[in-house]
Image (cartoon, rainbow, N blue to C red; front, side):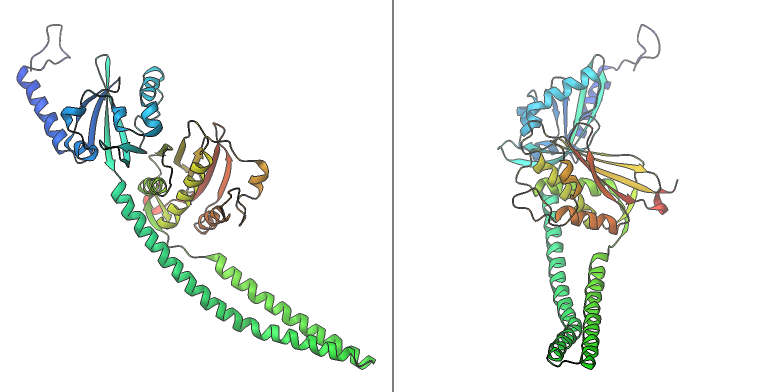
Length: 388
């Protein structure tokens, strides 16, 4: 390497150095485990790694020089050049430096889910963007199947528990209800026998019947309290990967996957105390609701954010840019059997509330900054890991 003629501070590379750097770049493109794609500011592909070849089914020679839109699907394909143009004009990061779960297109036209991260570099007056792509399809399908199996096991366990509780409930209620029936029948017979003494017996029979009815009510209330209390297997889990998995699972489980989901986890979030499967179920439910709410939107967007709040809490929000919530709907949003969907049972948000509150958090819905809806819920941080 030699110093340039116009003074120190800048370094010129010799021809041998340039060749060595090109060789090093080639080795990176051949060995990097995730798909790596380098594009310029017009969206033209400049480099395409071996892993990217395997992911997309293109040889580097046939795809280099084409617009990266060819690898995208849906609205990302339509809007990608606009994303870059907006960033170059305003500096506002919509996709740069933000992890996203999106849908990509292979050479044979099949669609698959990917985790996309994009970096940037400026060389002279020109920009280069490097995309790192990881295929989520098989991993998330396996995870989804595992969760389905776990859900089935939990379902059968609950059926067994319900059967046991029903048997126990019938046994416990049989005695007070039989007593109520006996006292009422005795009271009916006493009515046929006039006299002050008989009226006193009637009063005693009705008092005992009422007492047994209250006892039956107490049994039902205790059972309801036992069921609603619930139990969670809370442990220290890293929130970022948990949310990535939940977003991917939500996309895989929906028939319509063409809604961009942007994930932003603040650097100081760290670990939370949670049952990961239950928390993922909350996020999946909220993302699905958002996707359904955006079915008629021309440019739908879903944002998942996680940031630290006071009192050792982390707030997770799932926001959309849809039409928002009606005030009347908001009042009964988390009540069981309340739904605006024609085929819905109205239990999803009620279950979400139960899970969140069992974790010691709260859940609410409010207006998003861009006019849509934001569902926000809190989780407790792990003080052993997030101290300070």
